[in-house]
Length: 348
Image (tube, rainbow, N blue to C red; front, side):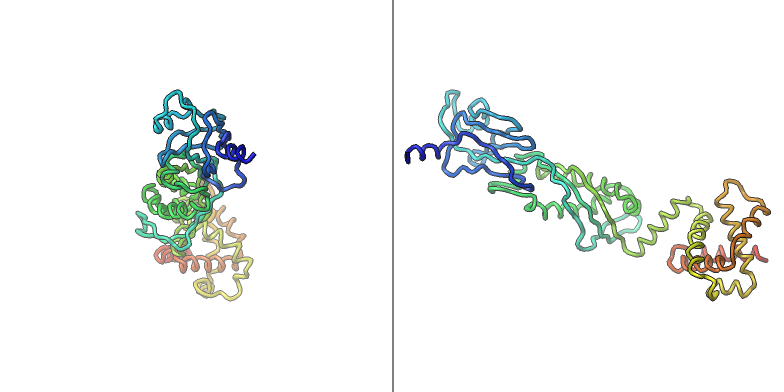
C-alpha cells in the first residue's frame, strides 16, 4: 500500500483551478515533486487562461476548454524539451492559471493636490477621485513583467502600482487632450475619456487591459472654482454680458427677498434710496430682465407694466447681490461701474 500511495503521489492526472475567492489574478498549480502524466487532462474554465512554463521560459498557453496533454497539444514545450512524436513519459513543468475576468470598482484618488499644466492657467492644483476596471489581457506578458514565479498574485498586490499610474498620467492626459482644463473639469465624462486614452498604453505594457474609467469628483482651488462657476453660468445664457447680468439678477431676487433685504439699505442700495431712486431703479432692472427673456424688444408700455410688480425691497436685495458678485470677482469693477452708470443715466 505504501508503494502504491507513493506512485499515486508522483503523477498528476488532472490540472485545474477552482477559484475560491475574488481578487486573484495569477495562481501556480502546486507541483511539489510530482510530474505530469503524459495524456493528463487540463481543464481551463471560462474567464481563465493557463500557461506552461519550462525552466523559466513561457511555453504553451491555453484558453477555456478541456485538453489531453501530449506532444500535439504542447508544441512549444515539445520543442523546448526535444521530445519526439513517440514521447510517452511523465514530465515536469510549471503551470500558471490566470483570471481574465474584469476586476471592477478599483479606487483611485489624489491624497494630496497634484499640479497639472494648462494652456490657459499655466499650472493648476487639483484633487480628484474615481474608479476603474481592468482585466489580464496578455498572460505571458503579465507573467514576465508582474506576477513572476509567485504561488499567487492578487489585485491587492497590484493596487498601489495602478493607482500610481493613474495619478502620474493625469497631467499628461490634460496636456495631450488639447482641451482647456476648465472644460475637462466641468465635464467629468470628458475628463475620464482623456484619462482612459492616456492610460490604455500604460496598462498594455503590463499585460492588462483598461476596461473603464470614471472621474467622480474634481476639486479645484477656490479662485478657479469661481471662474468655473462663472463659465457655467455664461454657458447657460450665452456670451452676452448684458444677458449674464440679467441671469445673475434673476437668481438673486428671490433669495434676497426671502432674506429680508429691505432691513437697512446698506452699500450702493442705501445710496440709491438716499437719492429717492429705489422704485425707479427697480423699474429699469425689470426692463432689462424683460428684454433678455423676450425674443423681441419689449415696448415702453409693456416694460413699464412688467416693472410695476417689483417691490422696493427686491430692488435693494438685487443691488446687494450685484455688489456681492463684484466682491467675489464674478463681475469686474469696470463691468459694475458701467452698469451703475448706465442705470443712473436712465434715471436722470
